[in-house]
Length: 309
Image (cartoon, one colour):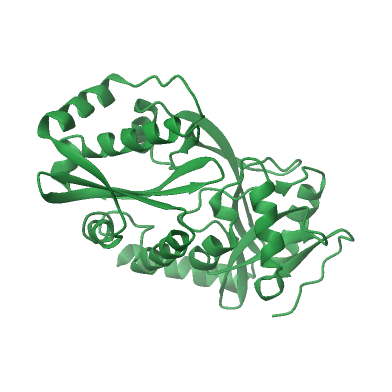
């Protein structure tokens, strides 16, 4: 792949093969509040393809995941990424980025933590607990924690991905339409690479000696991020998910770190996060469609077939 040329004199899109990964990851690490979603090892596994929009010295920019279907490029936000973020110096280049992105990607469904001026967007919320916060737990969370403690659930740190992945495949894959076997495999590869960098935490939960579920957590840049978790139906009814999440939150607080619930647009998940003390934080999604008419027809036809199937 060749470097893409764009109109900006200071900023440019750079394809994955031509990115200086050391400089890029240094920019991620030195940007306050940046997430693991922008880290190269994470994007390499989670995104189908990605590039960056960055200045020559890598002092500011943003990662841009994309996919290509029938020759049409789509700028998108992959599953297991809530939103990307503008890194480094905050300036008017964000507006330039958006206009140039639309010239490269006919289709876009891109979520970012910062607003881009003079552009239409949809606002969503994720939940976070800031370091050393006064946590106000809801009555439902308290009941479920008591229930889990009475049952005698035991929480342990683990280094084995497979038990949780098995429950994700058996319990979640049939129920969540956006979750596919391919996306689970991408997540597994990302987790293995993060584990090699000592950024992964695995919490396993047991009822007596029986494994009943657990959480994948990413410890990065003074934030503990909940990436994914899964429990048996019986374990969830007995409060195991509440107990494990509360354990993870307390550990993060004890270490002086923020806790990021990972983002979800499902109202029930938002309620769960609020019960455990999460506060809303907004992010913004931008959509555009300048794709060829033939592509729109084929996409509509495919969607119709999927509904009938």
